[in-house]
Image (cartoon, rainbow, N blue to C red; front, side):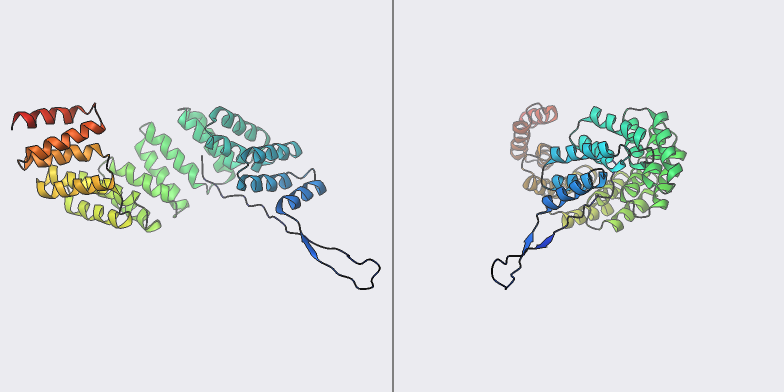
Length: 336
C-alpha cells in the first residue's frame, strides 16, 4: 500500500494522590500509576463519542501485537463517526498487509463514500485500480486526490506508471519527473526514473541512480542498478567497481560476486578471475546453482574438466531439472 505517516497515540500516565490517614493527624500520600491501557479506557469512558479515543487505543493494541483488538477499536471509531478517515485508512492498510485484498478494497470504497476528503484512500484505491488495469478509474482517483492536494508526489508517480504501462513514454517521463520535483527526497521516484531510462538505454539513468544513492548512501539497490546499467552498456570496469562497492555495503551479497564472475567469464575471458568470483558467490550462498554452473564453465574453459564436472553435478544436485548443467556435464564427460 501507499506509505503514509504513522499515527501516534498519546498515552497518558496518571498520578493520583491517595489520602491514607485514619485516626492519625499525619497524612501520607503516594502516587499510583495508571497503566496506558487503563488511561485509554478512561479516555473512552469520558468521551464515548470521540473516534480519536478509540483510534488511540487501537494504535496501542497494534503495538502490543493485538491486531484484532486494534481492528475492533477502529470499528468502534467508525461507529462513533463514520467519516473518521484514519480508521478507514488503518483498517484498509491492515487488510492489505494480511493479503485480504477483497476486504481491503471494500474498506477503501467505504472510505471514499464516508470520508471523501481522504487522499490516502484515494491513492490506495488508485493503486488497486492500476493492479486491476482499470486505468481510467485509477486516473479519476488520482486526479481527485490532486484536486485536494497538488503536492502528492505519489499521485504523479502512479500516473507515470500508468503512462509507462500504456506506452505513453513522454507522459510517463513527465509524470515521474514531476513526482521528484514535488518531493526531491522521493527515493522510489529516482529509482523508477533510473529504471525507466535504463530500459531505453538513456544515459540520464545514471543521474537518477546517483541521486538515489545520495538519498540513501547505504542502500544497495541504486548501486546494483547502476552497475547493471554499466554492464549492459559495456562499461565493464565501472561496473566491476560498483559491484565491489556493493560488497563494502553488504559483504554477504552473493549476486555482486556472481556478476563479477560473469563479467570475467563472458566479457573479459579471464577464467581464473571468473573462478574466484563464482567461488566467492558460492561461499556467500552455498545453494547458488547458477554460480556452480558458471564456475563449471570457467573450469572447463581452463581445461579443468574434472572440476567442471563436479560443479555441474553440484548444480544438478541443487536443481535436478537444470537442463543447461546436464548438457554441459555430458559435454565435459565426453571430452575427457
